[in-house]
Length: 223
Length: 223
Image (cartoon, each protein chain N blue to C red):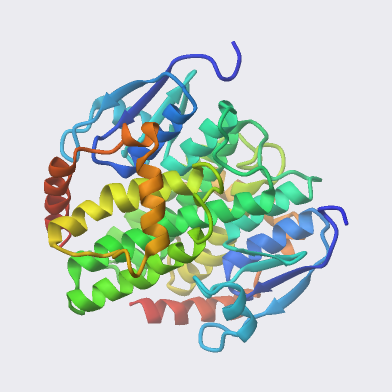
């Protein structure tokens, strides 16, 4: 069997940006897959616990007996295994920088745009300004480009897209915060519009109202 | 100029495991480099702030005008650019798993073996047991293998080596804790001995007594 054949299964959760970005990659590459929805956070399936004993988290990709946890690793695996519509650059330096910005989103943007904001230990206005300072790095990075990946959607677009417009923005909306206003972040807003026009991306966006309610509940748990 | 030519500079800090692992890779691959020691944490050079404006952290690798922050990204770049003595597997799945364990070390092992241990909010004995539970995953992973990478030292060995025996163990020693006793962790102890026998690794190990003092000071700051 060729490396890119065989059944693909994805264990995910509808509101998890980490699951959504994996679906974006599978859809972009036209890989058929079976999706198994997990009931999180309190009713994890025995299969999930068996497949990801270390972290017990979604997403988990299963392909030809190989079990892959963690969205960045899964995206890299998908890109190597199904080579059409590449999502990572070939050049080692460009590839490193894509990984850098993806990590930046999952660490800095989530910390400032979610955890610190929800706790707001120094007050909500300070938390908003601190989150904006971090997001401004992305505004600069996408300036003059269609996508973070260049002319087409790539690794950073999937990571940042699943987190910012299609996850954190739902929380911000629920909290009544205009975090990335057009006048301060014109490039990011342009990028979000471009991203939302891609059919395979649109298919991965959680239902808005249900998602806002969900994010507000998650925020309550973190307060 | 070929991709693997040109001057290589590394901004590092003697006690930083993230710097040490990059030196391990450069030495293993026989890449000549200029090492620039930073005076951390309070006296960062203007060069560091200029090269790594997002995180302002070591290590930073500079090669042919390319600026690379973060040790995992640097190791991947080094492996692609200087291909002798490969440190990552070629197979996409094996490569993903190497990245998985490296991330596991830098997140879980550091959190449990350093932060939670130093704070010891539930008491020192509980903290030690929780750290051991996490480290036990590595004991299992290295069982029956010379190195995490197989027959030779690889990505996970450099990441875990720089953190566990040559960094956290210095803190544990300073705190009087026998965290990974031979009888509980025979495989990890065997691995540490093997690792310590490699000349290029030995060259990257910080001076023991100076390092213990340093780690105890760092721990004080985190309490």
